[in-house]
Length: 133
Image: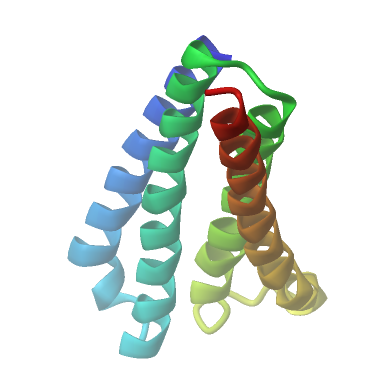
């Protein structure tokens, strides 16, 4: 699990830097300030949960738990749903996505719920692991 978390964190972290730089330098010329704020929120949450994935992987090296596996999965899928949907929503006024963009409305909160589930899984790990010490 450590190797997977390092690789996933490296990919997602590098992508977050690229997306953040794109937002800061090029995207502000294309979208409104409001849409740029949506983009930046996606980048921020991607960064936060990328570090969470890395931390979970490091914790798994100390003491593996299924709760850590769930946390990592929730954080990774949460980034895809939450941040990914925000990236697409940023362009809703630039490109005509038609009906395809309508499904993103419910996807963003699902990503947020996955983030919460990941943090709850990490809490469960902490409560169970602390009993073993």
